[in-house]
Amino acid sequence: APVRTVAAVDLGAASGRVMTGRVGPDLLGLAEVARFPNIPVTVGATLHWDVLSLYRSILEGLRQAGPVDSIGVDSWAIDYGLLDADGKLLGNPVHYRDTRTDGVMERVLREVPAEELYPATGLQLLPFNTIFQLVAARDTAQMAAARTLLLIPDLIGYWLTGQIGAERTNASTTQLLDVTDGKWSAQLATRLGIRPAILPPLREPGDRLGVLGKETGLGGVPVTTVASHDTASAVIGVPAQGQRFAYISCGTWSLAGVELDAPVLSQESRLANFTNEVGIDGTIRYLRNVMGLWLVQECQRVWGVDDVEPLLRAAAQVTPLRAVIDPNEPSFLAPGDMPARIGEACRRLGQSAPQTQAETVRCILDSLALAHMSTLDDAQRLSGRAVDVVHIVGGGARNDLLCQLTADACGLPVLAGPVEATALGNILVQARSLGAVGASLDDMRALVRATQPVRRFEPQGSQQVWREAALRLDRGGPDHSAA
Ligand code: LFR
Image (cartoon, rainbow, N blue to C red; front, side):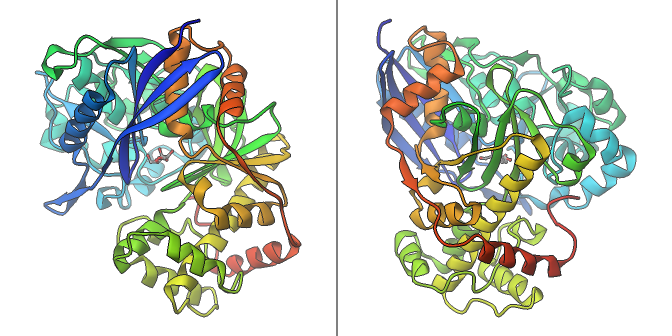
């Protein structure tokens, strides 16, 4: 098979990047072509994504990438833009951390009980799921004018090619996709006052979406539909062998779970707020969202500290497990004074609040490791899938302290890397469609294993201290992660 060059556009909540990949049967080389910040904008008290700025940066990045055989786009999930009858974007997409969904989930659950919603969609209850955003917006003039809903990567794909569609892995995060028959649940949408006609035809990862429009000035390059939910691409890029592994896709969020062949829709699973997101080739990502490095990022913003490295070095010197919190407390979701919120949470749990930046960061990392432990414990128990190793991929794989603490808390070896698992997953799906790599998910992962650096962290110390620390959280009342 010939060597192919493809471009991956990967949009994260904090930054976006354009990468190129050179791919052949024994080759997977990655280069970063452009990186740009993703800075949300508040307009009239609503937090928006600056999607035109992102699009301009994407076009510039693709220009710098030079000639490629294909382009693929992935981003964070759930958020969307609406097109009017002329195919024009109606307003800027709203950020999932905006407050417009406050109280909406509770209202919807009175109309459609969780006992009904969960087996239908398989999704964890996150207050910002697309379904709740759409209900929050259902009586707006914008919604009345809307003809088409496009999730963020589908919107970028539409602008690049003029073609519309809803890529399946990302569509599965809307809570409007039937997890059993794989179709849009028109009945559920209608029941909640959402017009099913705005939901576009589903597309599969690997399908050709179209070719770049002339106005891009980039020539008629094909755009391939990838696993456009960034977490779906990241899990493709996990260098795992066999089935007995857990993964943590760790960046702004920590997405911690296992890969299954079929969804788990039990009552226990629902009460533990586990999600069944659709992956490539019929796989299911059985995981729970943990409020990841967002907590550190937001502290850095408040402190005006750009470089995280000195903070992490200082945090490594702090006494372990001085104070722990539940990272999934709803109060941590919106942007704001995170150091103060963390201090309050510590006091509420009968612990003294961190006094220094280093202590605050240590509290967050200890708490994330603890949440990784309880999430992966639950994932194994609820799915029956036992694991021998934890793969950490994404930016968090660079965070030695978090990787070691996670190994210690879980009592399992952590394999850290690749950092760019999402871009690799994006690239591999394109390469597979071009016939440049083996056809199976195992083949793709074998290529990642053979070509990408991975670091190993052995568990140290006794797990007992972690189990005891977890008990401190029980003082906070019922688990906040479940609604
Ligand atoms: C990670 C991610 C998560 C999703 C969250 C919000 O970037 O895509 O999987 O729950 O962002 O969309």
